[in-house]
Image (tube, rainbow over all chains, first blue to last red; front, side, top):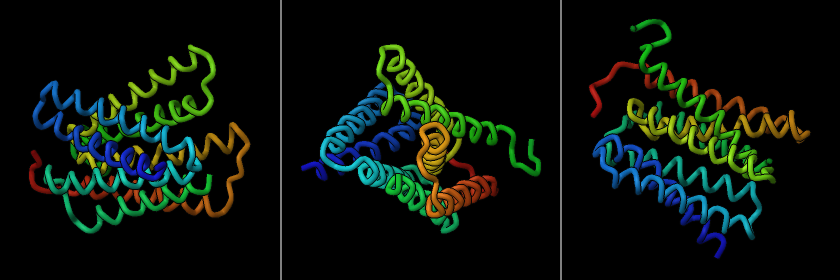
Length: 104
Length: 120
């Protein structure tokens, strides 16, 4: 069950990141509300997952899903650049950040 | 202004992301170590400032980029704080990972400096 919480936390983080784009795009209070709620739920589920799972791996998976998911949704919905150089850089950051969290 | 380091207004957005990451270090440490009410208040102030700057930078830079840099720098900062403040070990693996992560961030900065079509 802890893994389900963790994945849900990652998905809400991904939603939160996307809501930043939505906020600038739509400029509505609704987008702002969704932004706050998404990150709030993300933290809540992260805390639930950390009750049973080790902190390092929990954090690593959470950042990985949120950052990769946020980048992918940004490319699909908000026309963010798709060149291979940018994607490799984001990939490098995700891999090394996840590695650092695993080893701490 | 367009110069060797890129456009001034865009550089300001990167400064915002870097400061947001510094406040992220603050609240990560806070969530882990805060014990009294004022330490918790400080933690929440850090969360507010870091997300505020993150959202502001996301107005001009692709949010995928902003969030990757924010999460990456926050992680490096937290590891360094754990090392120098709380006496954790910084082995060769961590040092290599920090190097790779910084290469990724510098690469993203260079990628965004390249001219391209107008974004929404």
